[in-house]
Length: 167
Image (cartoon, rainbow, N blue to C red; front, side, top):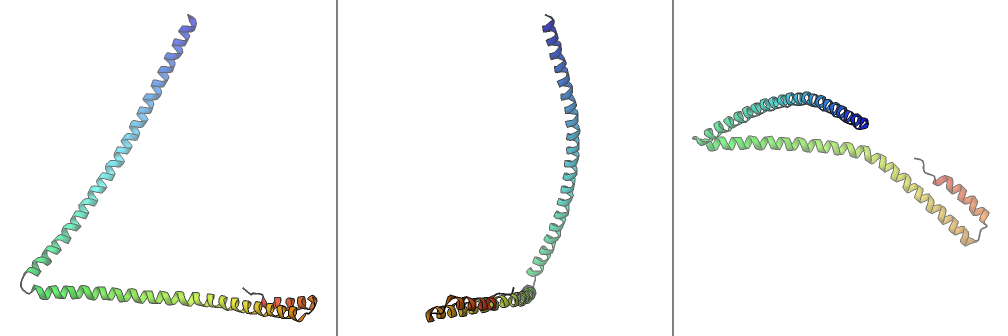
């Protein structure tokens, strides 16, 4: 019976401790919830002010277009429309020419930098291959002529130094 009573007391004390922890956790989560609510409210206010500002911009753009349309509907609107299209065309043409000139200068810059570096490497490689072919031809001719291998080795050492790349 004493054992059962002690177990009951232990369970009750464990239940009390877990209830305390839950209550404390709820208080902490309530604080977190209030912080979250405040931050969400501030975000909401910022979004509202942004929407008001955006709506004002759209309203202004609408008013400009409405005034332009009314002006075009009046007499002499064809001349005004033609001048507007001409102005837009000239603006686009100017932007196109500027972009083309920038592209041309960038291409020239990249070609001058890259072409010199790669041109030199190409020449070195070409020269190396020419010397290799010359050496191979000499060895082949020496073998055909029946020269001893010592002379062939001496020729290959001399040619080997000539054919090294200098990068």
